[in-house]
Amino acid sequence: MFSVHSKRALGAASLWTLMAAAWAAPAAAQGPAACAFRGSLDEAYCDENRDMVADVPRDPARLRDPSTLVFAYTPVEDPALYASQFRPFLDYLTQCTGKRVVYFQVTSNAAQVEAMRSGRLHIAGFSTGPTAFAVNLAGAVPFAIKGGPEQFESYRVALVARADGPINSVADLKGRRVAHTSATSNSGNLAPRAFFPALGATPDQDYRVIYSGGHDRSVMGVNAGDYDAAPVASDVFNRMIGRGQVKRDTFRIVWESDPFPTSSFALAHDLKPELAQRIRQCFFDYRFPEAMRRDLGGNDRFWPATYAQQWAPVRAVADAVNAPYNRSAFDAESRRELEAEQRRNQQRQQQAPAATPPAAAPPAAAPSR
Image 1: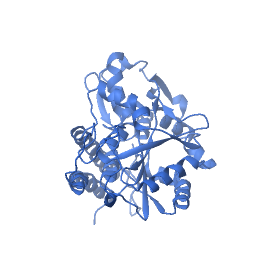
Image 2 (image 1 turned 60 degrees about the vertical axis):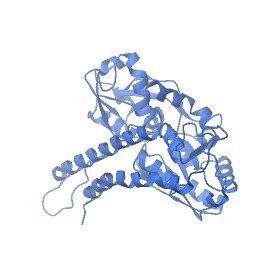
Image 3 (image 1 turned 90 degrees about the vertical axis):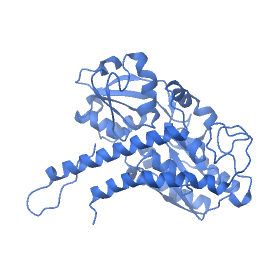
Image 4 (image 1 turned 30 degrees about the horizontal axis):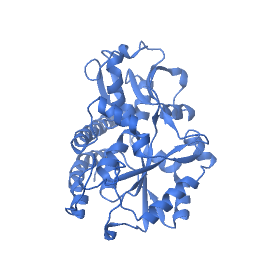
């Protein structure tokens, strides 16, 4: 029987094989349909109205009306945490759409994009950077961003370091160990690569990049002294402070960017139009209950959004670092994401024996970083 750690390692090792097989499925299913314009979209999709997202299929036989809708939220923090936070909304969505809605926990951006491309995921909250991969490679159609009464939520890239440490500027990162979250993350990787060179430190040249696997892991790693600093999404950092996971006075905000949109909420492009419209309206009519408002940074509703408009600054960052949101870039960055997960699994395995108490007591859980 596999241990928990070996199961995680096996899952990370086999995911890439499963993903590679799944990429061909949508294109094969659609056949060699004529398409006058695709733009940046994968060959499985068409953008003849030039709104930068996949068109609804013309063939009625390709439109989907599933009896159960599958929802997933970005793994910027612990997936189990979000499963609990979104439970009231999924209960409401079940009632509003008349269809059972279930939560699917994803452990990586790559797995979330693949799930929508393969047809297993119908509604999803993608983090800022991976939204563009989901649009181009998985036929995702962003339509909403969570926000408050006045406007949708935005965040800044915040470079955080320990307040008692020596880092006071981006240039001070030279020679240090700096946590980036994942290769596909806007705030945790692409934006720092675009902004930091002009501020005195080039990632991978002036400092060592270590992929932590998530914004919360980056923050906790800086808190524990495992990393010297980390660029993270300010909204995640502020939520962790609000929940009491870390103390604000432990950290120094070394630098902040201009605002970016937070996670997009997107639909699969091939849902029946009447179902897609019903889901959109359910989102816009919903008001978060008190516990959900507290857990999600004070946000209480969803605001309309489009990929063409709200994600323009994200695409500009990608252009600045020559990181196109295409299949080859996704493949390379997904491999890095999987390798980082494998390293974390190895660290857990190495830490587990040291944490095992004497005699026959059950082993303690390895620390999460």
